[in-house]
Length: 227
Image 1 (cartoon, one colour):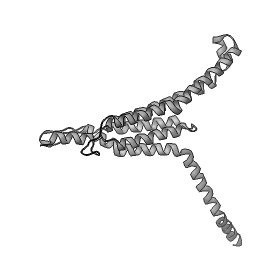
Image 2: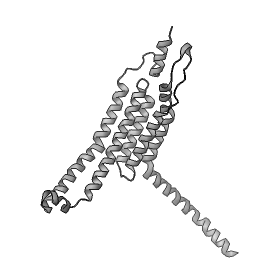
Image 3: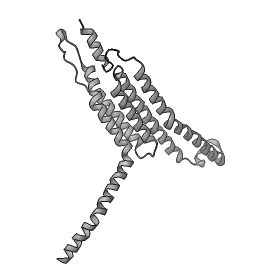
Image 4: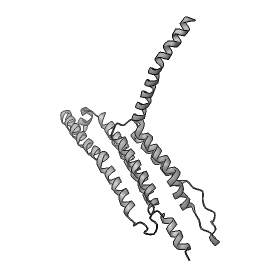
């Protein structure tokens, strides 16, 4: 019996250490996976609150006498968001900073803009998804290029060039130059173009001076049915 009490006492004394280690492991995991978790959260919010509204407007078919006619029950907008989100998660998987966080910033900015937009909601939603998809494809293409060129040797290129030393020098120089272009594109050019595009789409139409928070389809319905 004394041995059981001793073991239980040792367990209780070590329990705070176990709990602390568990909390630290959880925090480290959240820190490593924070970018993708935020992106997934943005995708879920867009699917739940924006895609459903846009899809309902697209599915709406007006009937006679103010009644709604039978409309197709499609979820194209939600499927597109899910596809783009999966593509982004796959593209940044295992990749170090700052690319995952740049993509997360693109998701956050896109979600903020589509929630804020009132007169360009559908177009802005499409541009946001296509912009993130293009960035994800650029990340995948760059990773494939870097992975493939890392496996090439001077001897392999010597078959085309004729000199192994010249081939090695050319491989190193070309890889450095292309890597620099890739980094500029992934870190600055594509994200900056994305953010500028979102802002331009948000400001392309003036807001309603009567009700700034009215959506475009609500304005159209108001003008169609006013007496």
